[in-house]
Image (cartoon, rainbow, N blue to C red; front, side, top):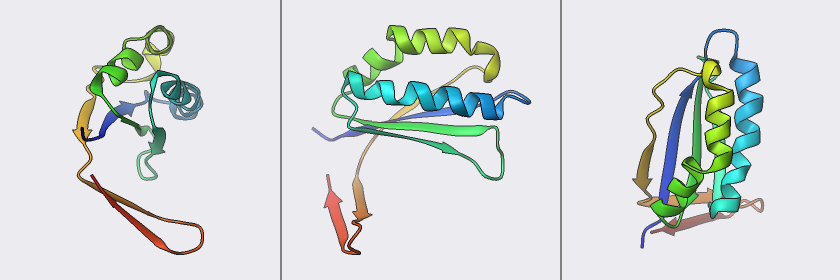
Length: 111
């Protein structure tokens, strides 16, 4: 089975960018409790209100357990005025990936 990545495009409301950044940085690691292999949150440099939260999953069911779980439901409720709705996530299959290890050697991986 191919790994998948959940991609959540958040857009913070006016004057909430810094507060939302801190809040999403707290909720993102919770995904590891639900089986995420990793997570990352990006904040756009040109548009400081635009965020992309991503996590890699072995199954979409694990992702859905996180997205609809109590922690994320509470997060979305408490911070509902801090981001624009609707939030329409996507779930994508990983076709290829790679990274550079700290010793400078390229590591290539393919699904």
